[in-house]
Each structure stands twice: as C-alpha cells, then as structure tokens.
Amino acid sequence: MKKRILSAVVVLVLFAGVLAGCISGHGTQEAKLNIMDDNYRNYYEIFVGSFYDSDGDGMGDLKGVEEKLDYISDLGCNGIWLMPIMPSPTYHKYDTTDYEAVDEAYGTADDFKELASACHEKGIRLIIDVAMNHSSSQHPWFTQACEYLAGLKAGEKPDDTVCPYVDYYHFSDKQEGTTYYAVPGSSSWWYEGSFWSEMPDLNLKSPAVQKEFEEVADYWIDLGVDGFRMDAAMHYEENATNANCDILNKLYTYCKEKNPQFYMVSEVWASENVIADYYASGTPSMFNFDAGTAKGALVNAVRKGDPVSLVNSMLKYQNDFSQKNPDYIDAPFLSNHDMARIANTLVNDPDKIKTAAGLLMTMNGSPFVYYGEEIGMNSSGTKDENKRIPMVWSKTDTTGMTKGPADMDAGIESPFPAEDEQEKDKDSILSYYKNALRLRNQNPEIARGTIEKVESLCKDSQAAITKTYQDSTIGIVYNLGEGNGTVDLKKTALENMNLEGSLTLKEETVQLKDGKLEMPACSIAVLK
Image 1 (spheres, one colour):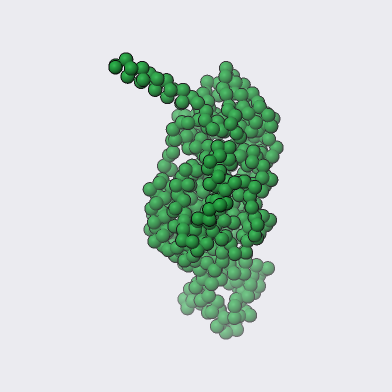
Image 2 (image 1 turned 135 degrees about the horizontal axis):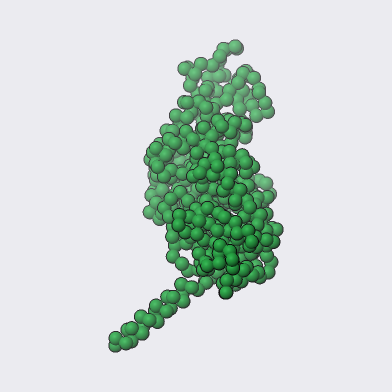
C-alpha cells in the first residue's frame, strides 16, 4: 500500500513538473499570477450607455457594469475607467450639469457606491471621467451668471460679490475670437467655448472654481472612487502648459491627501514632447497618444513588421517621461472613444489585431483597453456615436444588449463573432487578449521594469529588450516577421534565461533549444 501511495506521489510530482514547463493555447505558459496591488493596472474603458443593460430599457447602466465584473476580471483587467456618468443633456455626457450626482439614465449614487464596493471586493480599482475644462451650458453656475450679465446696464461691470459665478467662466465684453459666443439674452457679453457653444469653458485659475472641484473630489472619493480621468487637460488654459500642470497638481495633491493611493490619468492629445512636459505636473499618468492612434508607434510596428521602431519609442518614453516625473506610469492604448477602433485601423485582419494587442501588453505602465476592442468590434466613419456602439455580447441572445446612441448609424457590424462565441474559441481575438493579459499579470516586470535594448538582437523584424524591476530581470523577444524566425540568445543578456511564456497567433509554440528561440510569425516570448 505504501509503495502504491509513493508511486502515485512520484507520478503527480513528475506530472506537475511537466505541466509547469508546458506551453498552452497560443503559447501562454500556465504560471501563477503575480498581481501587485499598486497603481499599475490593466484598465478597461467603458461607455456605460452602450455596455450592458441590467433592467431591459435599452440603456446601459451602472448595475450592468457590476453584472459584468467577472467578465472584466476574467479578461485580466483590474481597473475600470467609466466615461462620464454625471448628469448631462447629451448622450456622451461630457457637458456636465451637476458634478455631484449620477445621471439618472445610468442609475443612482447608491448604485455607484455598490459598484465601487463590488469592484474593490474583486481587486478592481474604479476611476471616472471628470470633464473639468468646461461644463454644460445648462449648469446652474453658467445659467445664473448669464442671467446676471444679461441684466447689467450698458457699461456696468460685473461684480462677483453679487454673482460669484461670473468669475467661474471666461466672460468678456467683446468677442475675442471664433470660440466666443454671445451670452443668452445679452448683446454686450460673450463667453469662451473652445469645443462647442454648449460647453462653456470654466476658469480653472479661479480659487472658487478650484474649491468647487475639491468638493467634487470629496463627493466621489466618499462614494468609493479610486481615481479620475481628466478630460481635455491641455485646454484648461489654452497654450499654457505650466498653468495646466499647476491646475492638475493642485487637484491631484488634494485627492492624494484624501486617499494616498489615488490615481489620475490625463488626456493630453499631443506629440510625445508635449506629453512629456505635462509629466512636470507631478501627476502619475498621461495617455500615450504617440504610441496609440492609427499612426502611433504600436500600429506602425504592426503594419511594417518592425518591432525595433517600437523598442526605440519605448526607450524614448522611458527617458523623456522619467526626466519630468521619475514616478510616472505610462498609459498606452490602441484606440479609444474618440477615434476609429483598432479593428478598423488594421482593416479587420485578425492576425494584426492580435499582434497589436500583444505589443500593447508588453509596454510599461497601465494599458487601457476600449470595451469591445477585445472582440474586434468595428466603428464607422468619423461620427462619434459610431465609435460608441453597443457591446456585442451575443448575436442570438438579446439579454443585456443596449440600443446604443440614438444618432448612431444602423448596420455597423463586425466580421468577428460576438463575445459568447469567442469565449468558446481558443483561436479568437478574445482568447488572445486573455492570454496576453495573463502573461502580463504573471510578470510584474513587464509593467514596472527599467528597459534596456539588446542591440545585437534588434534588426529587421526581430527585437529584444530586458526589463528589470527590483531584483528581477526578464527578457522580451519579438518576431514580427511573416514567417518563422530563429533568435540566437548566446552571448546576450538573455543567454541564461528560461522561457517563461509566449504569445502566438494560433496553436503554434515558441521553442527554446540550445540557446536559440524558434519563433512563429508575429510571436512574442518572455524569458526569465
């Protein structure tokens, strides 16, 4: 009996050893997750109205997001960014009428509090969009200021002790440019609205306005929010980087005093050097528009099969951003709600879509995935509503499906299956995303490590880097060629490393034999 038990133990041990060295679907190694509880996160961006409908009215809602937390967590994301959820007269909700409330179309403050609590139970942090550059033209601050200005006599100057809100916006007694509009009910006063007449720009230099947003922060932090996504941060004061950095820093510092783990990521839609300048704000993250977008470093590397260009960009980000803020956390992405989806950009080529996802998930910082990106959802044209269409959970079961924005075009369909079908397919885009995020979650060095280029391995369609975090170093090797490739690791920093995991397009595997990596087309290997 003892011999049989001992034999069984030996077999189990041997089996475990074999399993630990096996490469499973798409080359992802079945290693343990090593998810650290810090502000490096994998974020999932959600347009609530188009995500999941919990009550059958056709509108996505906060309870719908809560119902899909397991899906988001299983995907490998441990952070959620909700696009604006505050009351607004528009579908997109970037024109706020009340900064301390939830739009009734999405639910209630209690619903948000429950969502935040449910997120925290699953190790997910929740951030929300704050459109602070401008309010809605229907916000009481603005309507009261306009009513006051319209009542002034000719030549009479506004008095903020009578109406404090006249200092909340950029009012003028003359039209100072094409972005200035006439105050309703007055022919003598004008206001600035750099994006739209119905989005009057707030005067964020005003101490009173700054105080208002500190109270806004109090409200949401008390409800359980973990951070803010700052909309249009480079437009707070036009062409005034230093002033904008100061505005960001003041609010971030205030929020950090309330919650030392508070996170902030800002939209600075500009060139790499301008993004770098905004890191002088001392805030942790800026969206990396140099890496993202249809002409960014990620898409460029995929289209040209050129990982060396991406590696060079990674090194530049590391150098330039860290000089302005040593504690920066990059925020790379492939697409978002303001641009064509990545599937459209890569002309619905599943191999290219997967490769782009793999590259994104090997970048430093906190990557952001736009809802539906992980199943290859499409957008259409330049119309914003067409970039925010309903999440395709199923093509046969309407449970939870939303109607989407009222003015979106009909008939926008993806050539790829819905989420429920992709879940069953180990070769799907969704499965690849899960594998890529799992590989990232197994290796904290990917997000946090200091990058060094392995020069001798960077040529043509191949490239290699090391990433060192604390006392651990990993290697990442890319083969973006159309065919198989061999990478000789001998006499490099990777020579004595073992294959930790890999990403391949289908059921191929990366093999490490005699110091050489045998890599299928468009594959990525992680070594340690």
